[in-house]
Image 1 (cartoon, rainbow, N blue to C red):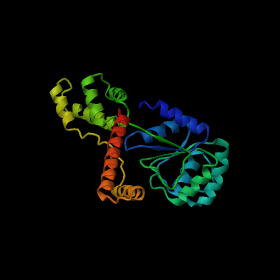
Image 2 (tube, helix red, strand yellow):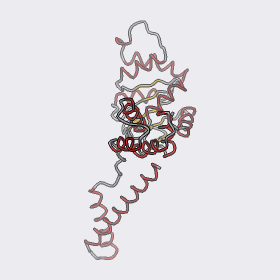
Image 3 (cartoon, one colour):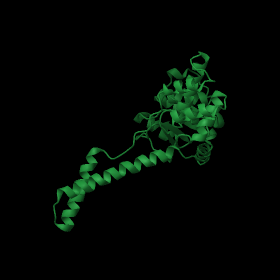
Image 4 (cartoon, helix red, strand yellow):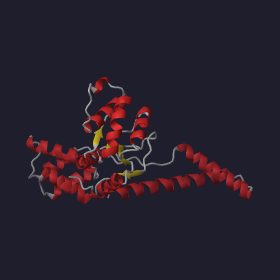
Length: 270
């Protein structure tokens, strides 16, 4: 339903070349949707709870490995020993959802499995403990795609309503779906008259908008580092220890960075 064809083609390429991939993006951007799409198209193993036993049990179940006794009573080593030969033959991708806080023991298991298959993970922030060959950041939908998604969900062509949904959601698919669901419920409960624009406007005024991502800038301590660095350079080259010059250079650079990051974030949305 979400227009992610380019992203899906890139993921297909990673799977064909057996390159591990991390999907990044804010909550509701469509990471789980993409993983489920991959699961359906490549018979992949989807895992959303990353303990060692749960990881290996779900992989073994997806691969339909038969054991003489219950997996509940088997060790991780026994499960891993049974999984690896099957992965060598099938190369079924492993999909990891919500892997921000992945533990070191799980990372070690995944490093072993990565030799025989493609691992695709999803997280809001890149996990430091697990390395990936490729990285793909999912961006919000453009305005046209957001309206198209809302039109399909609501089964209507009213441009007035679709514009309001796109504006409130900022193109985040999860937020589009949430607003459409709430709007449909409001109509079913006679809280909104779909033929009265004042009634529709009143409803959307009460909708909590999608909050933009925080602009990533240097931490405060970097201001002092840059300032004193510039001051030291000025003193070294010109033998003039003018403290105010160093502060002004640092503050100016800091403000330019803030404006640049803000403009970049805005362009990335629409």
